[in-house]
Amino acid sequence: MSLYLQLQGEEKAGKYQKIYLKYTHNHIVNSAEALSFRHVKESICKELINLFKERHSPSSALHAYEDKLYLSTEYQQKLLEILADRVHNPDYGYVYNLFQQYRNEVLGSYNSISMFKCLDIIIENYNKSGCEKAI
Image 1 (cartoon, rainbow, N blue to C red):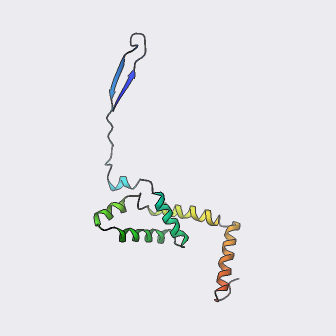
Image 2 (image 1 turned 90 degrees about the vertical axis):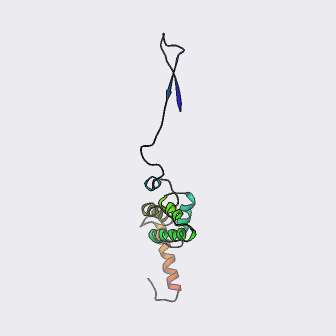
Image 3 (image 1 turned 120 degrees about the horizontal axis):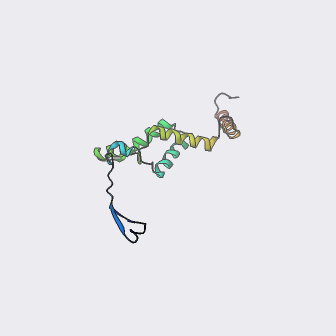
């Protein structure tokens, strides 16, 4: 890449200086560590949220998702690349934060009205199930 600068001043007016820039990374670009900093795909987030809707915890959702990756990948080398790449395989911290965000959107905070309404529905369904009564 080259950059042209126009010099200013009475004796330098109209003259240009050409500068060549060479950019190199200070780390290996295609390593497993570099892949771990990439952003997670939106489709993966939606898939994890669907697992949360099916009443998975963050860890069970991550395990279910990783099991799907294992079963859908033919070659071992490709599987290792996918598991190392955060675009396709988010870490547990990301999944936990996504779950917290989902829980806050669906249920609100611990003492909110929506949380108590949700608990009311759960207790009502339990009482209708024929098991012992919950108060």
